[in-house]
Image (cartoon, rainbow, N blue to C red):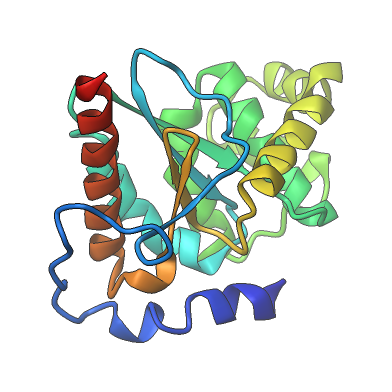
Length: 214
């Protein structure tokens, strides 16, 4: 999978500091996006943007500040959701459960970025539930609530559903972005993370125009 992710971003990473390139007002299938068929379930009252990610992914770590800032200023007709994926890797499945456990305890907003820092800067290995619980407790999270959330019966189904959605979207690596459940942004069309979000905005606008035309 590391090789797969590296290949996916081969054209993207070397150009992170390069100026963004302009894109056509109407993004093109096969160029800026790929169709997701059948589409993922998506709300009808909002244009949903999904980021497929993993805390264990170096590129997701790099992308996180940029997409977080972008998500904080979305227009009212756009919603944002993140899906942690494991690609069937046991260690990444633990990270997916950390995400959902923090969400369940109400600590996700406070500690989301801290998980990335713990893994990629502090080199903390979350290989077991005990390691995750100890870390969360050290950050002020209620130990019992977090441990219960990590081991909840529903947790496994959440992780499986996340991986199933990633499979249905046919993503080749993370981070990957889906819009309206129908369009998978083509990472290779972007010259930088900022440019990736510009393409996302263009696809959101495409969906918006389609809905207004109905």
